[in-house]
Image 1 (cartoon, rainbow, N blue to C red):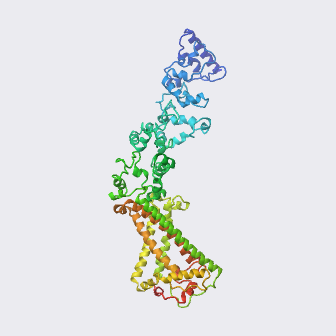
Image 2 (image 1 turned 60 degrees about the vertical axis):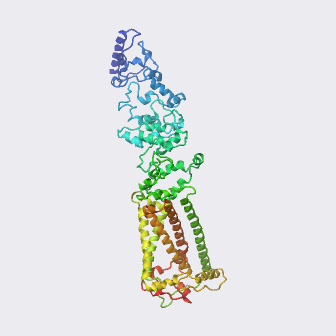
Image 3 (image 1 turned 90 degrees about the vertical axis):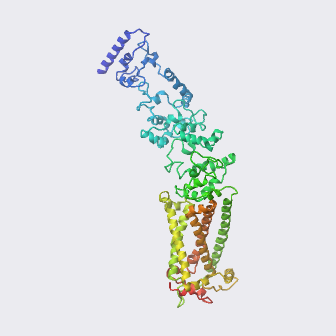
Length: 639
């Protein structure tokens, strides 16, 4: 009953207002609100026609009369069905905005009957639209992402339209710009990059996000960066029409732009080299523009590249040497990698590197001596590894096959009076090697193969404390200390010096090796009688000492790299890196194939030769060498 009374009052007011003006005169806003301001007011078809006077008076259109948009509402009483305002209506006051909108992708979408926004979708309803400067406005910069998300957060939109990007708003909200806006800090919003009304696709050369325009768009806020980029080799390439030249979004991303301090950012220290390699390791771009293709591979194989791949974000990456935005060709005096600037650039991390550092190539150059030297190191070591390990494996397979085919009765006891073969001090020295060598292998190869699953547990601390490198150096010192201790032991002990005479390689060792081969092939009925130290033990002993010396020298060169670079050209470090790596492979395979066979898998000692523990050799080997064997001074050493 109350509702009918309100409606009756509204009709009476409207009748009085209509009667007070001529049919063709403008109808005042009060006359409209006499009906439309009544809560619950609706048309004959039940469509709600209520408009809050308070909301309208606070809107951007408060100064307008209703007839400015609803021109067909007069004379009163107006028709039951009126034409709804559209873009043409808005153009009466906002001609520039509507004209710009008509040029944009949203207007094209409407023409194609796609679900695209109209004026009210972005600015709010006609009666409630607020100025874009009002924080409550849907078009205010702090609310714009949410407004655009009404459409662009949908997974269906790319399927219904030609838009290729899925959920760009969610990516933006997690970006450095989106976070700043969420914190009420002034930052870039959708309209800053895409513009407000004349939004065009990136493929349109007029678009603010077209490849040729995107750097200038970003430069509207990041002016110093834009100036540096514009003058750089990348910016100049873009000016010259090289469309593949990188722009801001290629390196930083499009919507999900993260600070370089975050590991997920494509320009973080951990990822920037991979980002650069997207172009500089591309064979097509290399052929098209004459870019040197081997630079990325050479960097990845260098110490910097290996350490970076293992998680050490403090080592040099592409931007550390070439710059960030102000990147110039190496022959440009402004370039940080120009010959005249290299000592200063490298000196940022390696104080005192000196001018000699500029003598060699940084990460490989065709026909450069350093690259050639590294290549020869690789070739020589690969031949050594294949040849040496191959011969070791063949020799041990022959020994194993012969012992399996012609097993001998096990020796159950050591002959009486047999002294220690490995005295206590030597066992301690061997124990330090047993402790340090596996750790060195693990921590060293984790640097070269950081993506491997077995390296992950070690490298999880690498970005923070450099645990892998620290552990590698500590165990290297332990191994070197064990070898030095052994050497000192030999020097100070008369009996050890006498014992070492039995370790010298002689012509008999060659004869023993050949005789053993004839025995394996059945051309000899019995094994040759060996001296106290056989050719197998001598080969392993001297190879171990040689390998330790090589690994120590190259390891110290890389450990104290600043000293190395102060007195040697840069390629010396690359050569040392290559030697260190391939010597490690050779040493590891030698232990696995040669040493482990003779102390573990040899049927005469299986499951393990306990000499390293109690100092006494297996009975089988004592008996094997007892006849005709020379007495060794080592057996008299009391430790």
